[in-house]
Length: 184
Image (tube, rainbow, N blue to C red):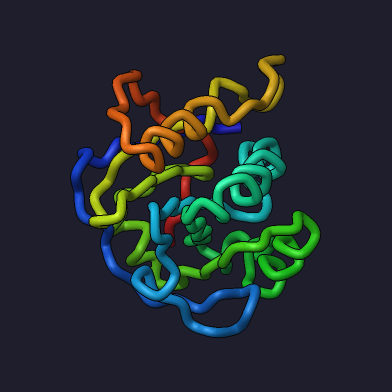
């Protein structure tokens, strides 16, 4: 299991805009049409990555805890589906249903969106403020498959709280670790 870290896009970077097919609804969704009133969390993920499978339950909990406070979560899969057929849109729909994902799960077939965000791994987290400026990028928490550290979402939850409650974020932002995005 390869461990690829986030590229750590500079804080303050404006969210790259996109328009992609949502595999949950079959409609196209754009950054502007899906963003939250208090902030937007973009997560690059896929169906088969052991790191994503390890954290998906916590991601769903974060969505359930924060969506009522104005946070929108947008998941994006950018993997090459020719080499990794387990990530095709039909299976993305099934994955979202099985994991009770009540947020968009978009398919980035061209991989242009992943490149625009400088995404490197799955999962890769990008939290944007109400002005679409990057506020946090990094890990969910210190838990990894097999390391024995309980899943808590503490790093990402701390960043979301700071964003929603207008506090500065002073903690060191550690890169996320996961499988590399499967490039064409």
